[in-house]
Structure formats: C-alpha cells, structure tokens
Image (tube, rainbow, N blue to C red; front, top):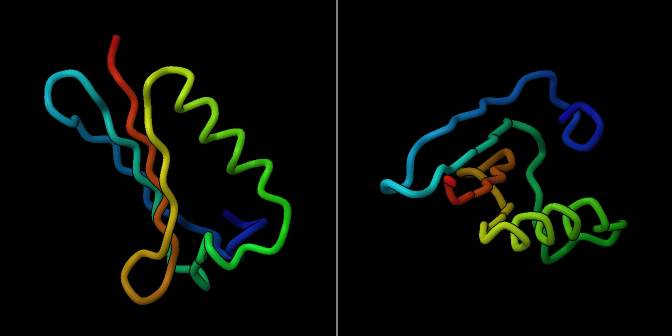
Length: 78
C-alpha cells in the first residue's frame, strides 16, 4: 500500500460468501486507482488474476467511494 498508494494504513476484511467461498477485501484512502487508465506495468495484477483463476476464484480492483482503492479476492473454500 505504501509503494503504490502512498498510504500508511489500509483496512482488510475477510468475510464468508455463502457456505463455500471467502471474500478478502482491502481498502485504503489513497489517491484511487482506475485500472482502465493504468499505463504502468500490470504484471502484478495479472499474476493475482491468474492465480485466482487457477483455483476457481475471482479478483477485482477499482475505486472505493470517492477516494481510495478497493481490491477484493473471492476464493473457494476447500
């Protein structure tokens, strides 16, 4: 979070999604992130997406409210 958003704190929530999945959500109050306008290297995000897909999960990232970033990962429980 410090490297990309310039923030020193973030909120991490872990919650069940039904009986067979878990959602991990990370939010911060940094400058925000628009994946459609990303002009830098996206290998980190592509790696997370590929790893989530490999286990039947889903990854998403975007803005949280008016300011900040929200990234979430939904994974199946085994």
